Length: 113
View: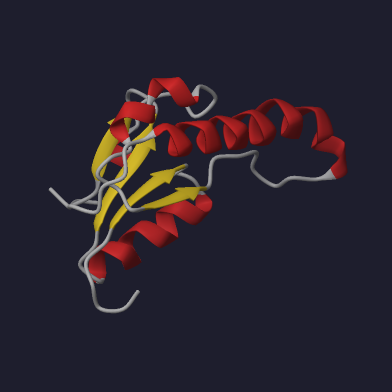
């Protein structure tokens, strides 16, 4: 990040990695928008813009990604292991494929709000 302000969309912002990444992005002056389930908005740090949606359904948030120029996919199963293979396929695979489809379908824009 070259000192330029970016707009970052994060799926999984209230999870382990998201809770660590968002404050750092905000400290650097970036606009951060995080996908959250309804009712989880208060888990986000002040300054982060909540985007309500379902990480397992990319269509539920695809039109809300813009104006982000960066998409970070962090939604997934906590503490993955071989014992959680089925859960991994139901959550990580579905959310990852949905995120790719949602990100590909958005209009290109680099303007922050």
